[in-house]
Length: 322
Image (spheres, rainbow, N blue to C red):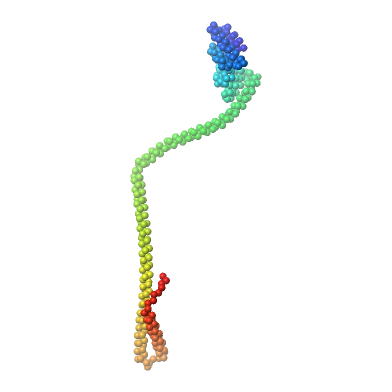
């Protein structure tokens, strides 16, 4: 049919145009022949189609044939471009419906389901009874819904990642801006406060001196404590010695005191005897009794004195419990 259309236009052309139409028709037939062989030669057919388009570049029928060949060879993007060119150069509704249908198939292979849905809808507008196109439309719409759900989740993740990245970059910029400012302030403070360094160094030196003095004082105290302990021991020893001597002296002084007391008492008895001699005629019985008792007491004391003197000749050492 396409050949008939091409031949019908040959009679209304100029001689040069007629020659171009004949050459285009020749290569077009060759491409069709390559595809009709038992083993189709798609590469030779593609080359023949391109030669035919060289002579008739706006011929929609040749563009449509080349697009179908590219689709069969898996060149979907290039096929889409030739399908679109064919739509611009044709006015027949039946050819347009077929081009839209195949254009939708190319978009499906490219997983561009939105454009595939639009292409199938345009085909059904021109040819509503085509069940194959209707089935392809339903399939494209289902795949589009799945893709939208997946893309929705991906878009949310991408937005969150972009927000995090933007937040991180902002924080990094703020840190970079704040760090030089803080460093400048620190440098200025160091330059403006050299006296503080000197004061701190002086305080540290004084503290070290104070610590050394404390250590020396503690050493001296510990030495004095030891000396005081030794002095205390010596004093205690001296006190013990003094106690021994005082006790010995007291033992020696006791007999002397007793002798003095005995002498005083004997003197008193002599005086009493003299007085008694003078007053013998005048002594009462009660007084006589007293005198006798006094004499007995004196005798007892003299006996004790004699015994004490005998024991005094031998010095006894006493064991001390302290």
